[in-house]
Image (tube, rainbow, N blue to C red; front, side, top):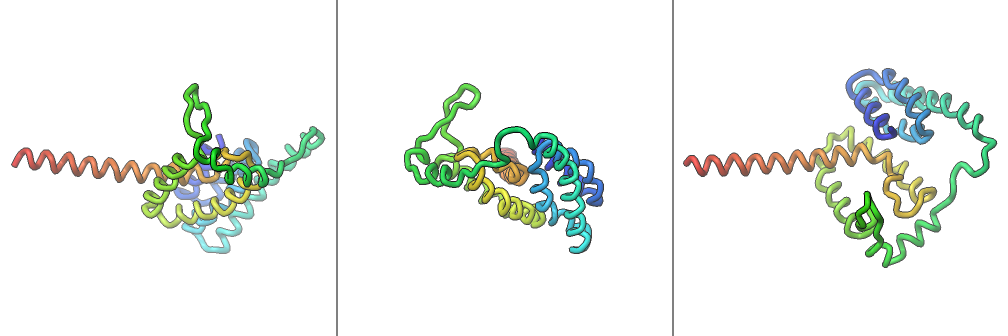
Amino acid sequence: PELAFLALAVWIILKFDWWWAIPVAALGAWNKESFLLIVPTLYPLIRRRTSRTAAFLGVVVLCSVCIAVYVPIWLRFSHNPGSTVAMRWLDQLRFFLHPRALLFSTQEAYGVRVLWASSVVPMALLIWTVWRGWRQLPPVIQRHGQIAAAINIPLYFLFCTPGELRDLSMLYLVFLLVLAVNLNELLGASNEASTAGRAHHVS
C-alpha cells in the first residue's frame, strides 16, 4: 500500500495540478505515518508545473493534511506501551562493520535460502543497476530520488533494523523506474540485434 500511494501521488502530480493529490496524501498518512516524510520528495514534481512559491505551498498543504490525519490516530493510541521509535544506529554500525555479515549473511525468502540483500554481492548488483539506469531518468525524477535518499537513508541508519533494505521504502519508486529504464535499454539492444540478424540473413 505504501508504494501504491507513493506511485499514485507521483502520477497525479505529474499529470494534473498538485491539489488533486490531497486525498492520496490523506489516505497515505492513514495507511502509514511515514507518508508525511514522502511529501517533501514531491516538491520537484510539483515545481515542474508551477512556481517555487506555489510548489512550496503545495508541499506545506500536503504535509498539513498528513498531520491532520495522523494526529487523531496518534492520540487514540498514545496510551499504548512502547516508544514511537527505537534508536538502532549502534546495531547498524556493528552489522556493517562485521565482515562475516557483509559477506556470508543469508535469509530465507519464500522457502529458499539466499544471500542477505545488504551483503556484498547483492549490494554490488544493486549499485550497478542504479548506476547504469540513473543517468537515463528524467531530471525531475532524479531530484525526487535525491530528496528521498537524503531523508530515508539517515532515518534508516538511525531507526531501522540492520540489513532490512525494505525500510528504504521511500526509494522504491525510483528503483522501479531505474529497473524499467535498464529493461528498456536491454530490450532495445535485443531488438536491434534481432533486426540486424534478420537483415544479414536476407542479404
